[in-house]
Length: 202
Image (cartoon, rainbow, N blue to C red; front, side):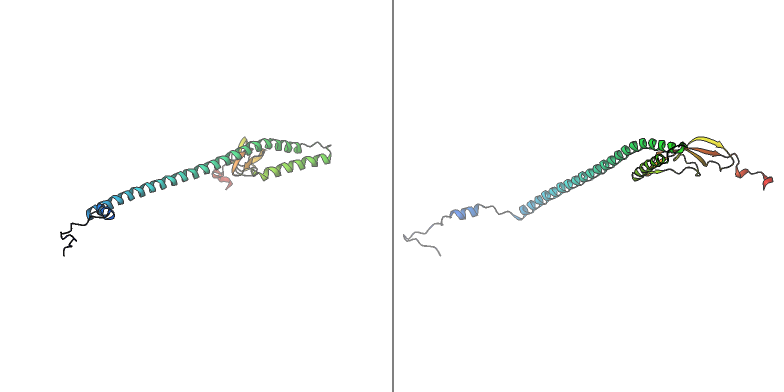
């Protein structure tokens, strides 16, 4: 049915409103365009994910490097502190040696109170060293161990087994598991070999 104008002539097409003009101007994508855009978005998303993964790996490497650096720094600080303690304790050991020598050669006419005072100071010094982890190295009666002992004399004797420490010239000390100072010792050198005993003695 055709609209009839009031003047009797056919009416032309109705002009579009501005809203309708804008609506028609909007491009509606086709299916192929939508698929292409979807593929493009997926590629962009994958690139973003890849970049995020790389940044996360980089952060993890940085965190691991920092943890290793902090651990090494703490270890080095501990080593330096232990080294500083070792230097100081080594100096104190010579003082302790002097106490031991003094007590080993006390004059007969020495005052008893003076001797007890020297012994007390020596005990206090040993207590301080023990509190820092210093312990004496066993020597006399033990097999010679080059890691713990330093032989100053190899004495030929048949009274002791071969290679046994028979005397301590200077006491050795450990600081924890570390040898701070080896013990200076005399070691037995027994010429008799039990593996080649005289058959007449059997």
